[in-house]
Length: 527
Image 1 (cartoon, rainbow, N blue to C red):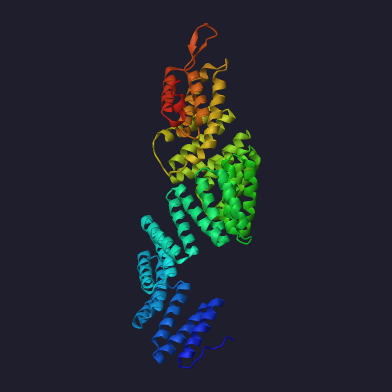
Image 2 (image 1 turned 45 degrees about the horizontal axis):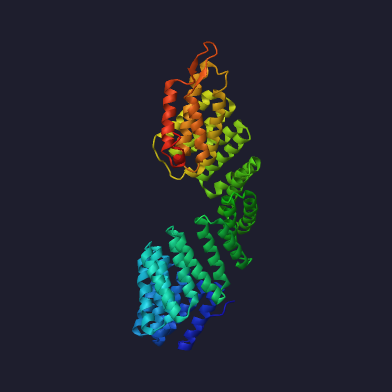
């Protein structure tokens, strides 16, 4: 049975209630703590002790805030602040302002949080509490950062650095440099972010703060990654890993994910698979569905790049099975397309079609124009692999129409185009071989010409830039040059155009379009 709080009306009994409430807070019994603090408030009221009353109100406010009851918390905290002002208790005022700041921030009222943090800072400056000033400046920096005012945020963190350095407080200086690095990182200024994190690392090493060192190495790794310096990313995260406690699974998973991503971008896909497998174990231990989903995806991507398409399909299927729990329909669409691509490359067109078809339905239902364009292209490729040029042409035409329409649904589909463009190029090469064969049936000439236009048109529209590359452009140029050429007619022994003039016209249009893309700049003299 819990002991009852003291009932006496004297001040020591009130402090005993405060101490007992604090003990209940530490045990996690917040409701019992509130009961004790209210008893202390009652004793203080009877004794006319404003200091005790203010302390009780302050504790009640912080406890209600811990329970998420912002309204009750604010009421008690404002009462505590009023009593602290009445008694000219600067420390009590600062405490009330600090908790009010936290409460307003938690309630989403950031501008009010700034107001009380500035009030607390003014009290600290008046009382000469230099070390606490650095903390207040950092808090203000974080608040302005939350309001997307980076200029003010950087200003206050700079003030924190100056005050912390003057007061010999490396911890707050590290916090300030880390925060500044985060701001520069979010703005895409990775070089300045890196410099800030290096400053934080130097201070952490000088003060022997291993936790701050691990965080600095991790942050440096993220900056290096975005700068494309993957070897430096690996080195930073390996150093972070050595300092991260074994039970800090979240920090360890961040380091492993960064290393795995670095190996992937360095085209060391075998090492990427090993790191992602290690990351999966951490994700399972954390029971983090989103991390599991992302890791399954990248295991699939890594195996795909290793041309282990069967294993890639296994990992992609895990994404499809787990994804409904995350509710990410776009991931579902993209993953099913990847499964289709893998089946295509395993020369299983029926399984590829089975994987591609749900994506088309998804795109049409949501009016995702770019996704619909890509779905038709994928389905057309599968029909092409089956040798059904009629069905292939029908879907190629739809895809080309959508690609050329200029409509833009949800942005960000370009990342999905590498595999699709690679398969389109394979189909183009295959169609070129078919077209150049001496046994071309005259009745199929027009159909082949249409397929030619659609295929290279899609490659041009979807494959400009990194997805196509210089080698892809060279293949386009050669194939289109072939399409405008002639062959020797066997019966008349006269040269005959391989395609009708309209096919040549469109091919020249595609050539002109390619000539204006960044990926074909070096080929312009040839054109």
